[in-house]
Image (cartoon, rainbow, N blue to C red; front, side, top):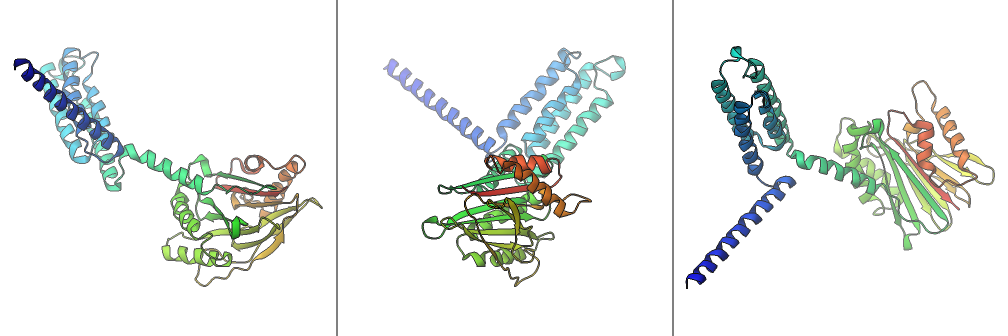
Amino acid sequence: MGHARVDSYTARLRKSAHRVRGGLRRSGVDYFRGDGSDWIALAFLLLTVPAIALGTIAMPVWCAPAALVLPIVAGGLLLRPASLLGLYAAAATALIVESVVLGPYTQGPARVTPGVVLTVAACGFFGLVLAQFRARVGVPWRRGGTMLFDLRERIRVQSALPALPKGWHSEMALRPAGGQSFSGDFVVAARTGHGGRTLEVVLTDVSGKGMDAGSRALLLSGAFGGLLGSLPPHDFLPAANGYLLRQDWDEGFATSIHLVLDLETGEYELLSAGHLPALQLHAGSGRWEEKSGEGPLLGVYDGAEFDPTKGVLAPGDVLMLFTDGLVEAPGRDISEGVDRLTGEADRYVAAGFEGAAWHLIEAVAKDVNDDRALLLLCRN
């Protein structure tokens, strides 16, 4: 009987330990996902405060009173404002205890001086401001970076071109302004029609650049991706124009060019909303031709009409779509930028355009403080 009671007690103890361990694990996972309470971080930081205070009292030369800024800075990153105030109270108490035990700062080094108090208070103030900002935004710091990464990857995935049948090759390169991760330029593309015979590609340049335009570009890329293929090609730009008008943004216009290509015949239509012309390389003559439809900017006025231009991509031809960041520069006419772009592109005519999109951006607009996007579509 005695052994049975011991075994039963041991089993209950193990179950209790397992539940506690599981609860701690779930709390930790929820915390770092931004979904749970911050009590684990608060408890840990509250334990570090007396540990630092004891270290300061025992070895003030090696553990200075200013070391209390460490849990305060960590608290500003990890805790909610209400929890942060509790940590500050503990730090203030530790400073008082250190000051009483070590004596006045005038009696020797490594004491609690007014400078130490001001330093700790300043760190606490900025930590509280940071915590209040995070609470107002609603995104914990530990999830903020992940969320931005997810948004960037979503834009990148949406800009990927669908696989093309044999005899076609596509290149897409996108470089945001200033080396940032977000761009106001984006591409949406889809295979539509019977058996995916038609390729539809929309290249859009949102007003602004970099992070300023990145949020609008993300919203528009999702909306445009939903519209593309769901509407007849000639209805896409009017629908996109109406969508921008409904957003009522202060800086809500955009340029866009819509390519509708028959992958069997090579025939295409281009519809433009205030965008720069596309460029077609004719393999027979080796000359570049500007191809552009007529239409106003998106998001300017309702009832806009967009007139297409037509063409044919013969074997060996190349069609190039790009944004203004590649050809515009202060004090230079756009035509000069276009000439420079086509001149660099001519270098790839003999060897082929595989890998050319990124190198063309590097060659003609490497250090430009504007978003740059370039799409090459080649018929072999």
